[in-house]
Image (cartoon, rainbow, N blue to C red; front, side):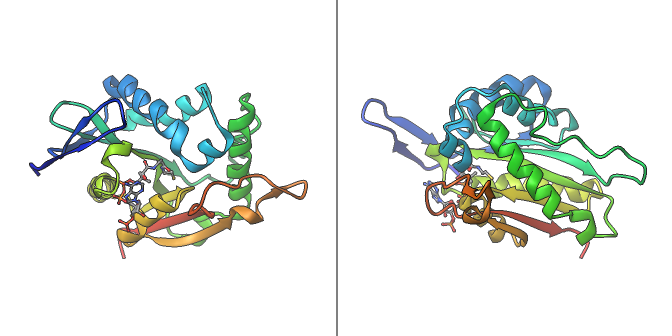
Length: 231
Ligand SMILES: CC(C)(COP(=O)(O)OP(=O)(O)OC[C@H]1O[C@@H](n2cnc3c(N)ncnc32)[C@H](O)[C@@H]1OP(=O)(O)O)[C@@H](O)C(=O)NCCC(=O)NCCS
C-alpha cells in the first residue's frame, strides 16, 4: 500500500499515509490510544456526539481496562501515528452462586455517560448472550472501534477486526461479540459475516416515556452482532 493522497481542512493539509501495519496494543500505548480516542471517539461515536459527552474519566477507564489482556490492536502508519484501534476484552459466563454484576449506571458519576450506561444495563436485562449460546462459556467483546476521520472508508476497521478474529482463533475463543451504536460499525461487521442477534431502535428506548437518544442518521439503532468461529 504505497499510494498517498491529501486530506484536511481549510488551514492544514495532511498527507494520508496508506503504509499501515496492524499490531497488538500494549500498556505502553495507553496514553497514545487515549489521545486518539479523546480526539475522536469521545466526540464522534454517535451517542457521545448526541449527548455532547465532553471529558469523561469513566469512559477513559472503560476504554483502557482490558489493554493488559493483549487482545486489542492498533493500525499505525509509517510515521508511527496510530490511526485506528479496536479494544477487546474477554467476558466469562457467570457461575451459579456468583453475585450479580453491579449495574453500570449505579457507579457512574458522569451524568451524560451515566445515561449511556443505563441503556447498556437495559440491554443486559433484555438480552442474555449465554442463553442464546448455551455451549459457550466465554467470548471476546469488541468494546471500542475507532478510526481517524481522515482514514475512514479505507477498510481499516475491517483489518482490525480481522486481526481480532485471528487472535480469537489462535486462543480457542469461539465467539466474537460487538455492540454497535453506529450504523458504520455494524456495516463493518456485516461485511465480515457477523450476524445480528439483537436490535434496539433508538426510538424504542424510552425512560419515563421519553426517547433518550436521537443521534443523527443513519444511526437508528443499537445492534449486537456476533460471529461464531467454530461453526
Ligand atoms: C465505525 C468506524 C470505526 C468504521 O471505520 P472504517 O475504517 O471507516 O470502516 P470501513 O472503511 O469498513 O467503512 C465502514 C462504513 O463506514 C461508512 N463510511 C465509508 N467512508 C466513510 C467516511 N469517509 N466517513 C464516514 N463513514 C464512512 C460506510 O457506510 C462504510 O460502509 P461501506 O464500505 O459498505 O460503504 C469509523 O466510522 C469510526 O471511527 N466512527 C466513529 C466512532 C464509532 O462510531 N465507533 C463505533 C461505535 S460502536
